[in-house]
Image 1 (cartoon, one colour):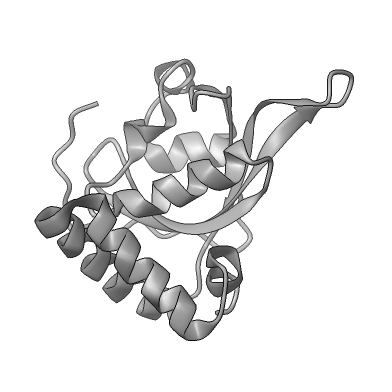
Image 2 (spheres, helix red, strand yellow; image 1 turned 180 degrees about the vertical axis):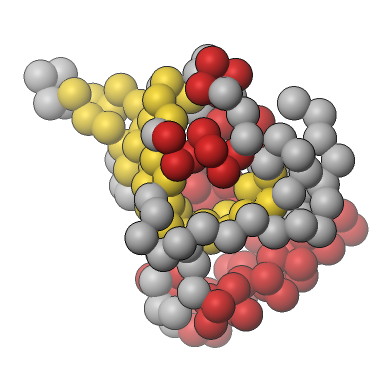
Length: 167
């Protein structure tokens, strides 16, 4: 999906939950109706596609590095994510992503993500932080943004997930 982002934000209600499931490589295996509707793609256009099909270019890569590190260590993670819609619009979510475990073999078989509407207070912190991280990535690569994020977390005395859940 090649889409030119616009400045049009899609809002959804606080009781809406956007859900997807993926395999271990991030390929979409399930999307609920709310997710399909907001993204503007048909279910058939989503299933079998990499989840990053909806990645907005304003998202710093370091956030996804943290996300994958948590998941590959069998941990759930929370993250604020700006996603892209088929028409170029965007929407913000507070995502909770967890490994889906097959307990008969005690191994992950995929990932499950449930997303809610983030608060305005959280976005007031996240949006400028992400702009700073993205700018650092453009100048010095992901190492530069990781340094900024690690310094912030150290300054606050928190782990990543703890920071994200603090507002």
